[in-house]
Length: 245
Ligand SMILES: [Zn+2]
Image (tube, rainbow, N blue to C red; front, side):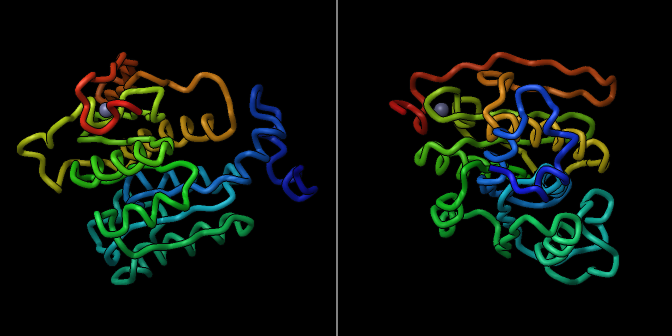
């Protein structure tokens, strides 16, 4: 059941077909882990907060730097040199004080993978490195937790909703870490935010029990021409991660 306050706050989205009060209540009871809150994860967290997610767990190590500010919309100039997750929590809680925000000043790793995923109903993978993305994929498949994998490079983006047992996993597409992938890549904040919103919406649809989630598909966005495509993807019989799940 929704409170009167919830009904007042989320009134406009309660009218969305297939969402309604039941979708809002499901969202309110959900916890989402957002791994990295940079150009992708920041806008994901912002939209989940706006939509009324129950709890966000934000995982990202390090302090805010000047070169983060072209895309990290949860951050402010006044927070330069301070932990990114603290700045993000402050922004999100002033925006929506009804949600719970837990911060973890760590990047996803072998050491914290189990602890972080354990608390989540869904994971948004917004990390730039394949090592982290594949580790998150492995942990989510092992625990049967849905994963929304968001990635971008320059003017291109990809979103892959992964539901263990139903869809291919990230390791079906990338059995090995692609060679020559670098930590630093070109990015305009509007592109990472665009890709992030598609990921956030797929996650909201999944959590709210809505139809139309792009399962068994990769959503590909080419922002240089504004062309969007859905590309069918299939499970690999020999996938070391999701075989037998
Ligand atoms: Zn797989």
